[in-house]
Structures are given as C-alpha cells and as structure tokens.
Image: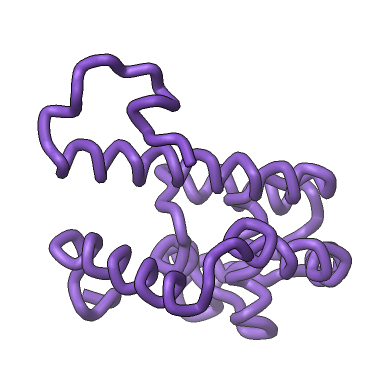
Length: 161
C-alpha cells in the first residue's frame, strides 16, 4: 500500500500529522468521486445530478423546495438553481410554483427521472461494495466513526439549524 507522500512524490515530510491526514482525506475523496463519476456518466449524469434525483425520489411524490434539496445534498453546490434547470431541460424533473406563495418553487422527480434511476440502481448499488469491499465490517464502522468525528466541529447536531 503506497503512502500519500509516495503517491504525490513529495520529498520533504508533511508539516504535521494533521496536514497529512487532511491531504489524505482530500486525495481519497477525489479518487472516490472520480470512480463514482465513471459509473454515472454512462447515463449522461454527473454525480451531483444523480444525487439530486436520488433526493427527489426519496421525497416523491411531494417534491422539495430548492432550499430543502440543497440542505440534503452530499456535496454542497453553489448554484442549485442552474443544476435544477439542467435536469428540467433533460426532462428528469418537473417544477411548479406554490399556490399560496408564488416565490416558492416545488421540484419533483418526473416519470422519466424515476425510470432513469431504476435503470441505474443495479449498477449504483454495487459501487460501495466495489470501492470498500477490501475492508471488513469493523474497519468500515471505525472509518464511519472517524469521518463523523472529523466533521464534528464543522457541523451542528441539527442540520436544520
């Protein structure tokens, strides 16, 4: 197993173990994102677009507001409105204004979006096993705990706050 220092061909040591952990996490995140993107691109979607469709499927048939979608995203995106416009142009979502407050736009996954996710499900559901199958259950639980602990100072305990 190659170390990060070897992978990025860095001769001097890291400034601190915190820096090494931080850069390892960034490198790992990038590797996982690229691997996941290779799975979603066959359907003409980015990983972020897939995430929005997954969120909307979970809220189906009610739909969600733009703000609610943004709060549920795995990776924050700066312009969710443009992301939704692209999905709408692909006919994967439908939008309508709230009857009581015209400023609010409700977004629902469309029948086309649901069908696309159904087609993707068998492949996407295998991805975590492909990426983490070399780790045992104890290691995975430890990884989850460590990642949640690392995020601790950065997030509130209630995501609605």
